[in-house]
Image (spheres, helix red, strand yellow):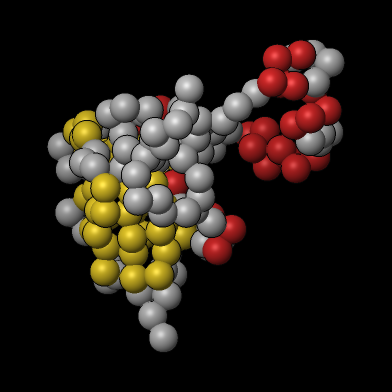
Length: 159
């Protein structure tokens, strides 16, 4: 049985489907990936040797080097792809269920920020624990695309 994974950007303008075994899930610490994701590292899943298709919208691309293009949503800015001559990788967080694709290796460790190894030691709170600091959270309505395919997005009844 072939595994199928779906995902897309935060606003729902771009969606994708991947069929096949996804074995190469990684974290890259290189400075180029840090900047592309606006984060301490980039979690990526190779879709090489899998059946990949865009099911909604088209990504924009930025050529970050002479060999690599990075795809992203032009509407919401969600990082989506790392595209190199040896294949494409998709941002792990763009999958509807990224927990299915745990990383198996770290790349670019020469750029690794030392405190990353200690993030799990930080105090942890649920989102709603910050209600006193951000009273607006009581009335927060998410416009983020849900973690499943939809026939139309955004919904017509959204205010």
